[in-house]
Length: 428
Ligand SMILES: Cc1cc2nc3c(=O)[nH]c(=O)nc-3n(C[C@H](O)[C@H](O)[C@H](O)COP(=O)(O)OP(=O)(O)OC[C@H]3O[C@@H](n4cnc5c(N)ncnc54)[C@H](O)[C@@H]3O)c2cc1C
Figure: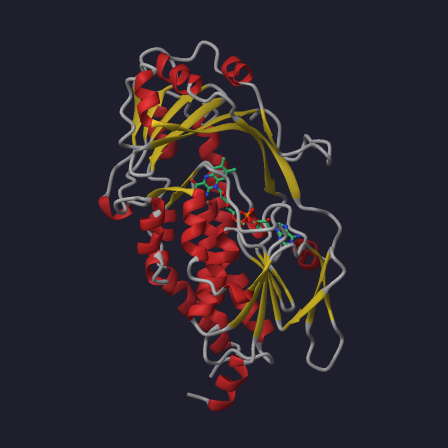
């Protein structure tokens, strides 16, 4: 090993802004690779909402490779990778089967309780590297000989690092440092959803007949529900979507001061699904106080996830519609790739800008492909696909839409990025 490069690498100093699922995965991956990292979170503690998140097979493989999957399964109380593929049913009448997505055991993931998933990641990070009440307001580049990034926080303090990674979610403040513009690049997706987590026993007691051992979607015109179990089937996670597909994303702007998540009375949600079938109404009746989400996405897509020594990961880079259950998974892929490149023995403060360019080259096309596929999937579920909501139409439009997400060799991506760095004579 090149001693000089290795010594330089050890002195590489990385700061992560934002401690959500993606920022934390990034911190774990870097710390495991012996890269110095400090994490700055705006809130008083690491926090996730009490809801479910599907960890797809691609993300589960990364968690396993980082050595954290077992802890995730323990903390989320899941017996293993047991979340199979979706069965799609009509939201109306007798909930007739529309499309059974082909089930392949190797594509199984985990339906996880979000807060417990976060707890599992936190367990791998030494608290001395984490800082709370640190809301980043800007990132500036100092113009010294060896440029350093200076993070400015709302409390007036600053922190310097060689590299800043923005994992600060859809409302990212690091993003403006990357785009170099005050334009937010965030748009309302014309989609809202109601969310709830219900004891499975309560669902059965409400007379709901559908078996949720397997993830289920209930489809209808302009609306659909995603339902899957968490906590080893003790709880049922419900997300009920409603969207306006007749207008392009970005054509409606919500008032900037309107909260993006609010609690609403159950009646509002029930009214939205008036006339839907027994099991849909039964499920929704079990959510006394649903949260309502106004889903925003990064749009138009960024031209780069990187500027100089600043890089974006997760929703800060590519916040997408959740219709493939793949947004966090894409962020976990970002974290794995950026950590894999920053911890390469040949990476040093002097070549790190090119290394981040390699990250952007490999990650942006893939994450954007998943963004587009998620958008398309939502249209199909809501009867706006090319072939309509009939079983034949949905089968034709959906086909095997999760294959490109789940069956992906992420280590090969890192190899390709390294090969490009060699072609550019950045790496030997
Ligand atoms: C309804 C719904 C269902 C979904 N289901 C799935 C699913 O099943 N599977 C899946 O893979 N994905 C799913 N997603 C997407 C997934 O939730 C997101 O992609 C993921 O949570 C993004 O993680 P993140 O760490 O990038 O951002 P966030 O989780 O938003 O975390 C950002 C963190 O940064 C902090 N922060 C923000 N601003 C600052 C600042 N200025 N300074 C410092 N810290 C800051 C925040 O406090 C927060 O802790 C879903 C999304 C929605 C809306």
